[in-house]
Image (cartoon, rainbow, N blue to C red; front, side):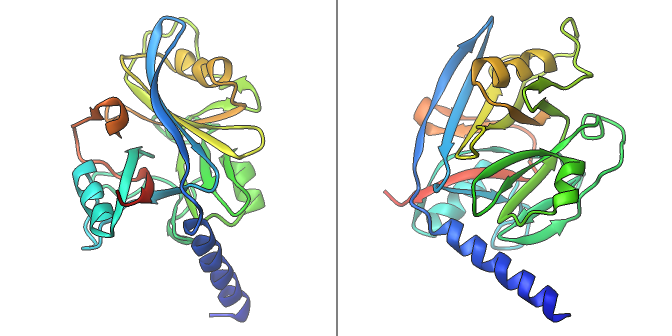
Length: 251
């Protein structure tokens, strides 16, 4: 290992510790109506203890909200909300880039490919020392920013205020969908899941027009789920891959 690599790893570890030491603050999860559809929305202000989770302390895939909640509570903290946060293979490993506590667990994928993930432009959600970002994958790869946590998914929903160019207003492809959008200053991340099947075009407009967020990333459909006891949500379904969760001091 070169000295440069060691310094980079050390810096990343310090970044992760800095982020995890933040004072958790979240604006409550809530239900929201936009146009003809209803959604569950969870707002997070930068500085809160927002993390990504892939495996449990036993090194097995986390998989379910129950396991995630038990692990968080076992550490004396509370899980405020959680949702699936990126596509995954049959063994629940991430399809694209995945970074947890400044350690890269899966590499970035910049090529076009099949399915929603490969519908370029896709993107990366990153938590860094400066705030939250949702960035187009190739632009992200060119900058190679340091992230304490990051997950790649696709397609992008909103790119600098514009909807993904492949989305059709009259599309009949409809699923329960979830994703994340980030404010222009990077100090607010908003997670959303539809209550009923929606098109990509409808879901992207929620972030751009309903939530006024210039960049947003699709996490998944079909398997989309939310844990948010504030609004009575503890969705069940297939085991998940990467998850995002907001952690707070125990209560």
